[in-house]
Length: 92
Image (cartoon, rainbow, N blue to C red; front, top):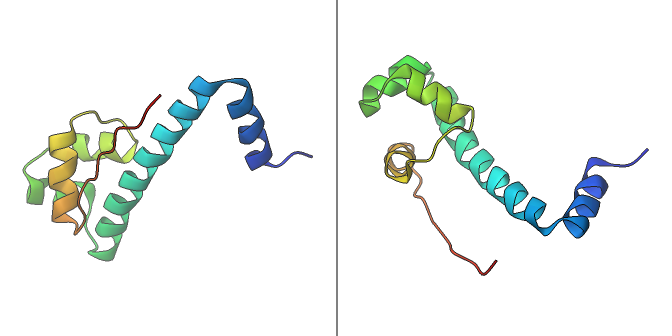
């Protein structure tokens, strides 16, 4: 039985676009994990965190599902949780 990592490596070799999508997904996952870790550490619900940040609970939910595109809001949330956003542009 193949390991997941082996499957991903094969897929990246066959399709360079897959790597870009995979890398973006991993970066989004790292952001989501930090936000969820903060909520858990501070015993906050999505609604409580939303109130602290001045956004809706639905917005926090979408972010925690990896559905976000507004970097300003993500940057504000990460700063609130003790992190900062680092954006890097690399050659395709």
